[in-house]
Image (tube, rainbow, N blue to C red):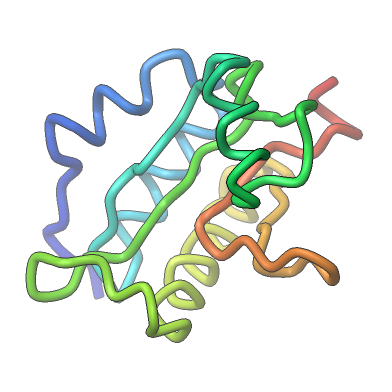
Length: 130
């Protein structure tokens, strides 16, 4: 069942500079997602990346955000981001994985990582998108 979720003006702004294939996957995911979501961050500056690494929110300075190959998505329920409800992040991941499959665009979800679970993070595979 298709939902009527739409990206906010802020989310659209956060998608500027993000690779078109990832944007396509995100837009399709929003159409099939069981939960509304927003784009927290797309392209980052190296200064922002350093700040996030220093705070422990990232483990690398070689982030896919620097090149527009990653975006961070968060669920919205009752007009807030439920940071403590992993199941909502899983719903987004399921929609993103399904839309990536439909669009034939290989993505990686940070929630699948072993050592550093990053439930908001989605990136294009380095194998196919250098």
